Image (cartoon, rainbow, N blue to C red; front, side, top):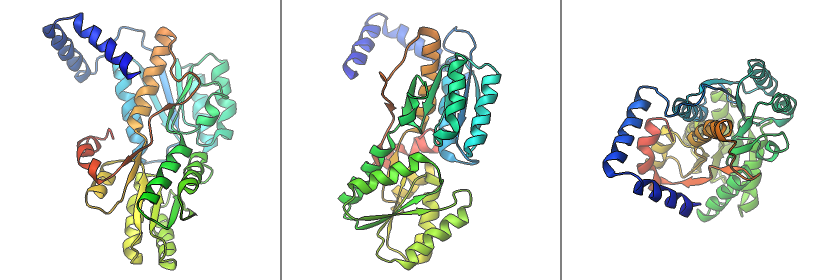
Length: 327
């Protein structure tokens, strides 16, 4: 794939002068800055409906990627979210009633979403799934799935814990019923040679999250690693570690500015990045390609955006991107 893209790029450069290429880049940058599209296709409407709760920085990054692709592709972009499966399904139904031209959904709770996604497909609305539900995406009729394989991501965590010589880990699940979270912890257990225990917490109540982790660390000093499944929960785990007087390393899924800082100052050991910006951006872009040219990617398999294990060595290079909210 890399060789093909390189050949296409080389051909495009041969076909225009260096001055012409520079002018094209400057024109595209100006159009983007002015909020103008880079294409003249119809102004289609795409809706994205996710299982995000309020104030989730991960989904802010997904949304930002989708919005920036929408500007480029001349798309009217609608975003809505609810962390309850039934309410998320109702938001999808609302998008169907609006007769949107494309639909992007996450499938953290696939049983709640199956019927309404089928309705969208039956209505002729192309669907792309993102982030959660790679196993169900094709069966539900989606064009493709964009995200990381949660089991593989979990295995990457187990491998990293093993490399770091950890012996007993806690996997903190902050959203019960989320199949992706269960897959992450199960994957980590599969490749981790030590012991790993699941801890279920109420992710909508951050003081409760901190208190639950603190109680566990206080009662079991042999725990030497805590893995949280989202960036906002890493900070709570760091506070819990400090209060409990624990020496456990805090590691997390996902990346944001706070996590990058934690990696830099060593309050965090490592993070697993699934590049949420790409999940939003590519979902909109692939829907546009499908509407415009009937293109599809993946060949029936998920389009993977992760996992990528991020350590302190990587944090400095990524800090500028996390600060602007795109990593």
